[in-house]
Image (cartoon, rainbow, N blue to C red; front, side, top):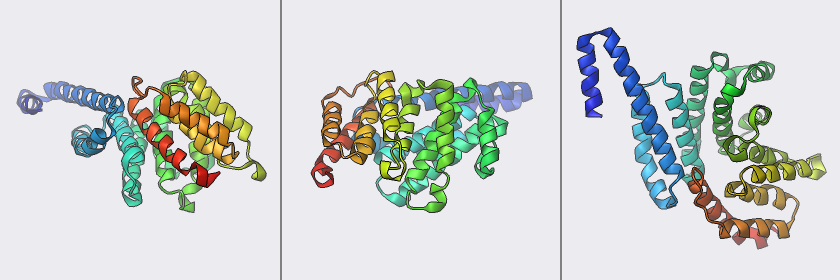
Length: 287
């Protein structure tokens, strides 16, 4: 970092052209570091190490953002790290609200930097929001996913706030767009999320549990059953809604017996195994 700062100072002396080149270098270094940090976190199987270590890196990420506030890729990676940390490790509701708000704000900013039509989409009426999303294409898949996941995390932390819950259709629309553009993205995550959405309403109130089941099964098929988080959500959302104890316990046993070490999903799988243990402990009371 000291070498980068020195290069910036030298470039100021040399002139504007060299300054621009150096800023590009800083931007590339920042991107590479943020991506490497994200990869290291996602591939770490020691939950305690990640839980204790990530807060310090959040400060570092903020410092990188101050230097590169218009770097869309860096902003979106920062959103992912904030959101993932909040979802996996933060139990205090107020703190989780703060972190998911930061994640969502960064996702909105990154989306705006990537695609001008997405600027201030959170304030558009639903018809305008729908039109803006409809115009997006395959090149925008990562932006759509970043928005959807950050927004979903924000909503989860505010599930008792009706002013927040009314935004749920917007997140659903983003996931539906993902399914149209690339259903295999992030190991079938769009199907996993849609399985959760379809499990929100019980059959007695017009819900479509069979559609939820198909989405979960498709997510598992795409990931070759390596995404343990999808199995846990399948058990937590579908099996519990249907009061299917046999399916519930079978899915959780599969999660607990599986090897969590999968490139890019190790941390998520370890979190899934922790969730599976908690669901098994509460199963007798639930069923």
